[in-house]
Image (cartoon, rainbow, N blue to C red; front, side, top):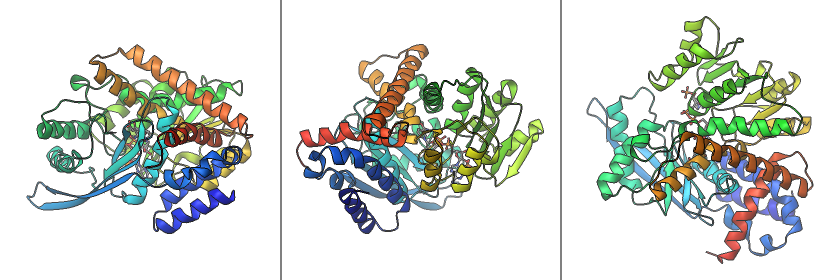
Length: 446
Ligand code: NDP
Ligand code: 2IT
């Protein structure tokens, strides 16, 4: 690593102890930026790295709520407003028991570059709570969301900070939070994205991350003279991103053969298609069931506590969580002849796995590029709210598709210009960074 990037990384580790995921995200970005920092001394002169690794604001708060047994429960809430150089803070909320400050900071840091890559004016942020929605009644989730918003409302707003969903936060949670915000402020502004269609949501937002990850894979494959059609794909997770990844793969004539959750994975060599796909959507969206029930229903293999990465495939779409592809998983994928990895999740590959992918010459699409379709379509939801209009499904999908094509092109070109052709990690990080860094310089230090 260059002396400058190394110095800043060491400072980050010393000043943010006990936050390995944040260190990991920072390390990857700083390392990628070296060719850019070497070429342009202006960023060092303006102390851009020292500034960009420090969130503009971090809020942590108590979230008390009453469960169905009338007992008071207390969770911890977070909103990290990382960077507003190019627009209002924007990024999801994650409700999962593993959430602590380090997770929110890694996600917020990634979001800065991702949002910049979309070409839309959105700064980077992330928030959430260690609340676990699993096994809670709708009323409990509602009371939690109301309490969470009772503090969060002070920090957000359509020109300030616009949260959305992430793990454990879907249309139900967004609805409860939006209702509470409206009640507190008597304002119907578009403070959240991922809203229901009836009250300001955008068509295609639910599908956007998964669709976008497949569009990104499509672009990467084109550079190798390949196409999606006829390919076999492994997908992890079974939530929002996984669901619409499988749908788009089906539409484009590929075959998705796996799904997973934190308990295990299923392997359906005939493909998750037709009635089986409909069953899967209903199982997850309406019944909030477990993926094992798919295996039980269709008599396919259930693999307790196993991820999908040992299964032979052409395309892989990690769509569950961070660090879900470790070194051996990456080696298995490469040994089995995988052509592309398109990260639907945020930072699903460990640094050792990324090294294997990059070293093997396969097309590796990092999350901040490959899964940017979700936040991009959130940006389109914000545009529609401002216009007081709703675009059609076709119009939003066309814009999403074009944004993914542009992100691919910009990352691909940047990698070439900075001497790392084919390396989308370097390309995405530099392309995302330049716009933010230049905006920071233009606005003076603050
Ligand atoms: P959901 O909550 O809808 O689904 C999450 C899925 O991942 C579930 O199947 C869940 O299984 C699994 N999962 C979560 N944590 C773990 C874990 N620690 N180990 C194993 N499996 C796990 O979330 P999303 O689909 O929205 O998010 C998935 C990923 O995509 C995340 O990394 C998120 O940050 C990223 N992302 C999401 C976007 C969006 O628009 N929603 C946009 C861009 C990225 P279980 O039910 O057992 O917990
Ligand atoms: O990681 C992400 O980009 C998201 N969870 C979506 C954020 C958003 O504001 O739509």
